[in-house]
Length: 220
Image (tube, rainbow, N blue to C red; front, top):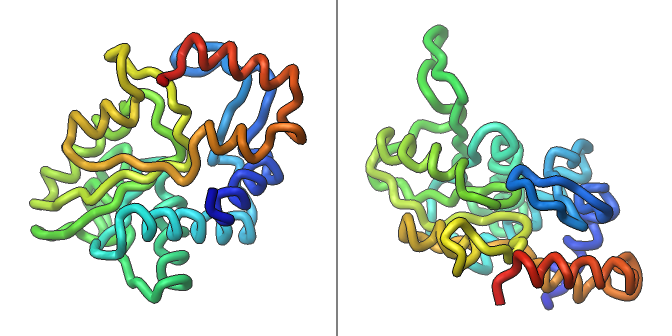
């Protein structure tokens, strides 16, 4: 595991973004862990988050893209801080863009989007916190394609839960990739979280709960 991945896992725990216990997910599943990117609230946390996303995007997708897009609402600060991280670490000047839940019909910046305008030929990286069902991408991908003839280079999320998707055979991330034809990657996976934290944060009892959860909902 790369050092930045291990550091990111420890950072998620330190920031209270990755928590362990008993949590009911939107899917109705009762999970022994939960991740909420909305809990990154300080300048230092957002700076570290952006650098982690920038490293992961660089490692998986390279730097041949123009725009970092974040679906509203949690994706908005992710897109902004990822652009800052790309500039700081690699000298890459990407533009940020995000969608609005409702189109703005007044002022100088009307329309569906915040940040840059999308142009034909733009290459776009999408950033999200975690993808469970792919619903947000199903909502925002058509908006991107309606705005301009863009190409999505890939989707980067914080954590791959490695859980079975709606189809019952692949993960939600794999299903998204199949559906839209672009790669879906994560900064870290649940396997890596367990590897980094087992024996410290992850006690034998918690490991047993994680193993049970993955036996029911995980994908080998």
